[in-house]
Amino acid sequence: MYLLDPSAIALIPPRQYFDATDLIRLLLAHGLPVSAYLIREYWLDVGQHGDLEKAKRDVAEGLLD
Image 1 (tube, rainbow, N blue to C red):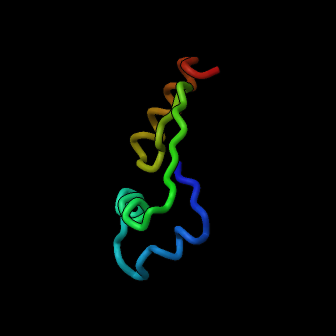
Image 2 (cartoon, rainbow, N blue to C red):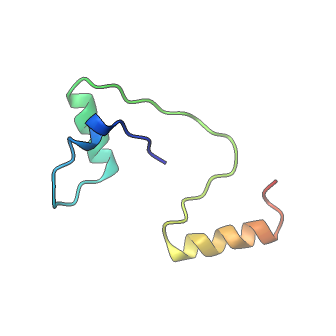
Image 3 (spheres, rainbow, N blue to C red):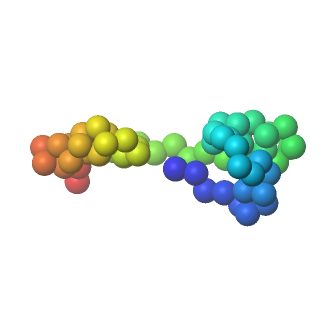
């Protein structure tokens, strides 16, 4: 999950593929702050169909509180 200040979004080039890791590198190159928050709870990116299905199985199997 990424939380971005509007000024960071303004650095994203229009109409071209630009990955989140590219943005992080660009922010660092501009001397802008980048932070992270470590979570220990269950987390699964469900951006792909197979991952969403895995999340459904994990819920059904009681792996989540």
